[in-house]
Length: 156
Image (tube, rainbow, N blue to C red; front, top):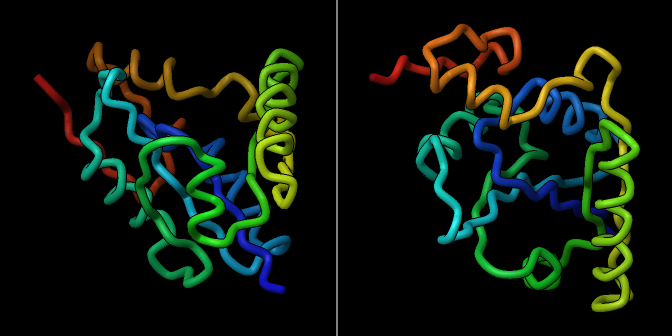
């Protein structure tokens, strides 16, 4: 059976921490869907099209990666595409508690799913999309926190 993982998130923006998790998971899975969840109640800094394009640029030469978007429950999307794994990165103990609860609910809803946690590399622990967005929103240089393939234009 093919090992298919979904790496869900808003990815607003996609960071070096996200990139590291995906790169380290490549040996574990046959296919990884980087799945951008659409939440109409959430105001994002980058448009959906921008986020898709940015992430595609990072993995342009990797046929094991597909960048997609979806609406609704992640578990329903996993069922739809035949994924048996959800990939998540953990930076802190608080992340673990939050992600554990979601993983247990997902397992209760779909017995065929396993959530795989990868610990963030120590140098990426402080990096999160909220902080990077704030740097960008205020005209700062966030290039060290974003994959080198992503070229973000300054916004007015």
